[in-house]
Length: 97
Length: 341
Image (cartoon, rainbow over all chains, first blue to last red; front, top):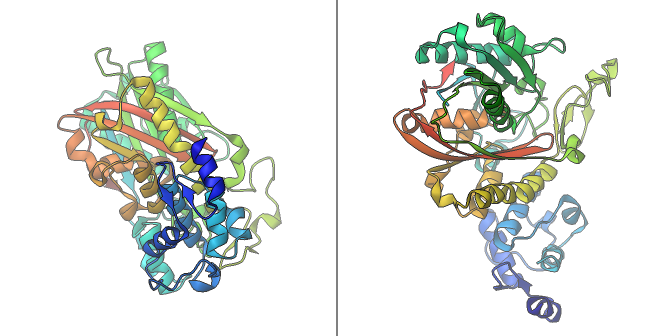
């Protein structure tokens, strides 16, 4: 209950299963770790991910795997389809934490 | 379990030679999906041909009298004919007696897990003393070359598992589950009675992003299957462990169905397993459907299982949707090296 309240108050923070807080900055850093061809610092919350790096279904799987491993949260094909920016994905993931 | 053998086709293909996609995409496939090489059957070679080679060698290595084999179960989704079952063909070809009980089970990625449960419990309840579980698939013939979501993934393989009723053997524990609401996540839509063959079954359709296939070829919804596995596999394994009051630390190895490297690595991390504990054969053989777990054991753990006791936790998951896990202890299992045909 406490963690839910905290999540509600700080929308840009994500409560992971381990109750550690995660920021959009960490979310971006995790994506950069998974995708070798992204220059560090290039990806911003407002970046349109389909334009920032070569987008394909395998990249979608890498993203799903990262979110599941790091945050214990599931995002599906529809979530990715309706998201444009990195922040859109982060918002969906944090709403399920 | 008295013996385990696996057989693959001789012809090997490399993902880096898959000319339908760019060189960069091929490298990406190797890195994420994990398949470097795989074995591909020639048209006309069937799963039962590979099973036959594995079974003949295993029976010979075990020194079994064929007349004593009372049960044969064939688990596959790539049978010799629509009618009849393949198990009878194998019973005859292997020279097993008419008294042998033979039937098919139609499952893929979870097939070896389900098959072991079926043959083990049947032998236990009926008292049949010797049984053969023949499990495998030829998936490459039904994958479209112009479908990068399936063609570079699958490899062909078949296996033979020999079981002998032994009251002193360690028990095998199973947790089997299914969810048919996801039946179309991995599907060949035409050719069964729901959508019988028609001329249209063979027309290629463009699904975008370099994916062309007919309705008589396998379709795989990657993201749906991926999320299914991440949702169901870990709770299934944990429930089995909980029932047994054990943890993964009680097992020497954890063998997953070789779905794809990214998926399996995610499952490995979710279960907090060390790399050394989770063997892979996907690099060498691809996703071999129902054969992938026993093939991985033969290919990666052969020397361990034929010279001592090995505690194994295995998990198969996929088409159906169907999934399950086994906790088992292998003790000096006769295991020839991977055979080829």
